[in-house]
Amino acid sequence: MTRWPLTYFPTLAIALVAVLPVGVLLMLASDNPQGFDARNLAVLGNTLLLMVFTAVGATFVGVALALLTTYVQLPWRRVWLILLAAPLAMPSYIGAFTFYAAFGPGGEIDNLLGLPTPAVGGLAGATVVMTLYTYPFVLLTTRASLSSLDANLVHAARTLGMSLVASLWRVVLPRVANGIAAGALLAALYALSDFGTPAIMGLDTFTRVIYVEYNAFGLSQAAMLSLQLLVIVGLVLFLESRVRGSRERPGRHLFLWPGRWQTALLLVATSPVFLLSILLPLSVFSLWLWREGMGDFELAYAWNSTYASLLAALVAVLLALPVAHAAIRGKAGRVMERVTYLGFGVPGIVMGTALVYVGLQLPFLYQTLGLLVLGYVLRFLPLAVGSIRATSENLDASLVNAARALGASPREAFQRITLPLTLRGIVAGAALVFLEAMRELPATLLLGPTDFETLATYLWRVYEAGYFGQAAVPGLLLVLISGLGLVLMFSGERWTLSKAKAPNPVADA
Image 1 (cartoon, rainbow, N blue to C red):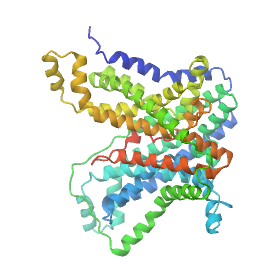
Image 2 (image 1 turned 180 degrees about the vertical axis):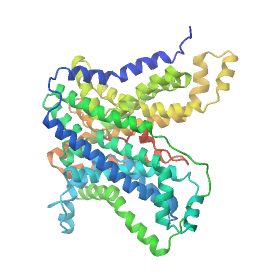
Image 3 (image 1 turned 90 degrees about the horizontal axis):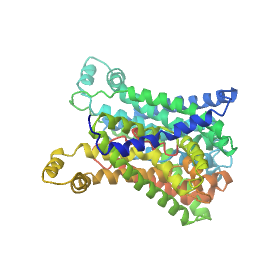
Image 4 (image 1 turned 90 degrees about the vertical axis):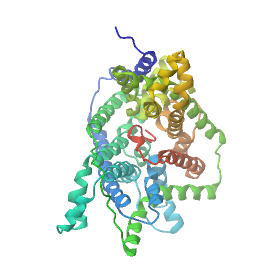
């Protein structure tokens, strides 16, 4: 009989806890005889339309910018790439909030410049905001595929009389279709699980209606809606898992050298994306800060966010260590590791709904910081697991074997060999969990203790009360935190799409 490695036992316990929210939702939904009605059908339609329109919009913008940043030799190319990828690191509810406040009659643009602008809301407004904050998924996955292509086929097509645009359309894009599809599915998944943007834009999607039902004490109906949303999320995750990247043998890279006027035209055409997604929120929050100052913002809100997120990062790393090492040891460990990834596929509003019921059954947990940290850990544990596992897989196993041969116990070998060599992955995983927890909105709204305001929840309360000017400080702090996430994302020479395993974020899902 094969003996299980010691890391399998805590990993199995963690995997069982990871499936707890789904089991709770199934139990709650069984108390609701009304499975699907006309209202649910309208909510389903809104959710699917937002998902599809976001995926299409993100594909259109992301592919164009991927071609631009990969092939066209623009001045300050790396700066432009960072600026264009920056929206990925920001929670979309920041953009939705500032769009809602800036546009329309009586909006900030109208008041400040006297320029009438249409109101932004509903399906159209939510689609615009979601597109602006999800196109980097497509940009990065498509760019990764484009970087591995051999440009000789493009040159051959050009010599046969095909125009540059036609050669890109008929020769290049079909070869990166898998990369485009992967990014589009990630954008669709983000749109499905996002809460803040549909809520601010007044669009009844599953996430918004679940929150409304929870506030109306309709926990069983919220659970039923959560399960319906999870079915759609599961389908998108399945489709995403079926997309396989295709790499060609590296060859000659394609370089396009535009003229001066062409460069100016490309930069002008690209600028609106950065202006709307990054500069607009910064400008609106800065205007409010200049106009109204700190308002009634208290530094305790920032401390609450920091403290809860630090606890979540610490617990997530401690739990991720056995899970990551179990995944390396064998097939059973890999299966249990994949189970722990379930939490990241569960939208924050759904996770919150399930854990609220757990808190009601365990009064010592209800509305406590411990329950909130548990929600963060279940949501973002895969970030820590993925980071630690990636580092651990690159370790030379002979070092541990040599330590064991010299008489070191497994614990001593881990403390003196494995742990120091995986420290970089541990720190990176903890930082990612910390950043995502700081920005998490729906789970914090549902699970946070009474009178426990964080930056995200204070911003939400300000929006609900209509005191927009008081959102300046938390908004700017969240943008700063998002900037730290961007630095992490581009810290290495090789660029990776970490939200593919995670999800700014589903930053606020």
